[in-house]
Image 1 (spheres, rainbow, N blue to C red):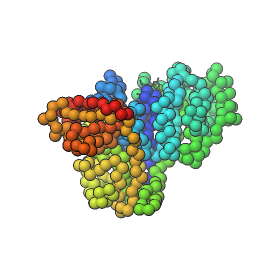
Image 2: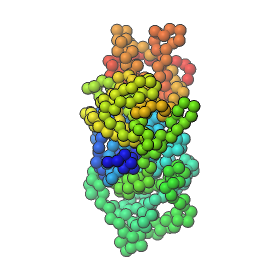
Image 3: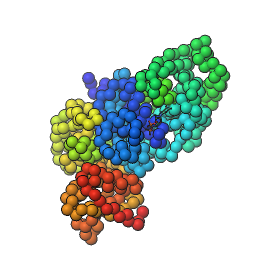
Image 4: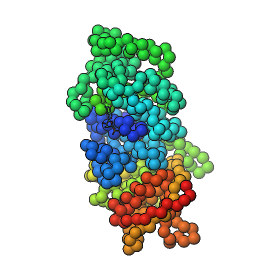
Length: 473
Ligand code: GDP
């Protein structure tokens, strides 16, 4: 298959949402509606006590029921190859999230129909706007009592400052939600549940909106739906793909990830509208160039480092996003920062706790490389060399603390753990300038990152630590 064809098939995205809006459920439905190809990293596990933990490698995630780390999964959906990057929803993880979003070509914003635009959604959307990433909107939980659809779209516009254009419209938001009007084809899409909890895809039938069948399905909801459609026609925003890809308008889809109603029209719309990997700006001495995914031989950058992905391996993986060219196993590439050649001999993706070796990958794909210490966040690797992908943002840390092992005989394990975990970038390590051998300081954007650090030093390196917060914030 040619490089051009492979690139055209790819859609690489991240889901942005407030916790509980339905990100995990929607991701699971991608699994249901497509074929999982492979995962790079870890899949967010279910809330404590929940079902369906695809991977459970990090105890703290399970205990806290939060998603701490990002992962990437690859699906085939029809002809498309979809890479989904999981963005941690917790506010303390904004830096990691930000870096993850640099690896995405577009974002899906999931909004709870009862809650509207929530704080975390707003923050994440802002990142997308800064990076010019196009955003599709999925208004979820339409099967539960919620707010008026037009009002929800108005909130998206007011709060986020982007035009919203409904590509479909729900029969209602509430327990009776069973159909959507496809505004582009003027059909009523009617859904029937095939299994409780949406364990199977929902059956979907199409009826012209003016047909008797459509009228019968809508019943007494016909008038309100007709009025809303009229309103959208007259006062709503037009939609076109170019404006969307420039980040100026977000297409809005309604549905219920839980019952699967509206999931398929949304995925279809996503594949149709979301951009394939395109050219990216890179730095060269004294200027910038565009790196074309087809013309430029293999290049990629490291957007994430993760230590101890798998307790069986106890090592560190560097996740790269392929930007151009074909990636092949055993490729010898130039490592820009180190100024030397390295062989990419054991590229990995992970499925739950087992690793798979990747033989080839294309622009938009995410590959995990074993990292014996040669990779740092933001590193560029490329076949030809001579340029560097744009540096990833470093956030100013806001909290500082001194950290020490409780048991001084564990100093070696402590040093190793600290070095590996700070390489991931969520916490920075600082040494006192007047005593570089003294106890290190650590600095982070949020408090939770310290807790995660201590937990992991204990869980993964067997070192109990004392943490003394320092007063300057
Ligand atoms: P996340 O925190 O955004 O990943 O949210 P989850 O996908 O874990 O969903 C949070 C809760 O909402 C879970 O209990 C889901 O079962 C539930 N949920 C998600 N989507 C829907 C939906 O469309 N309808 C209903 N009724 N519940 C949903």
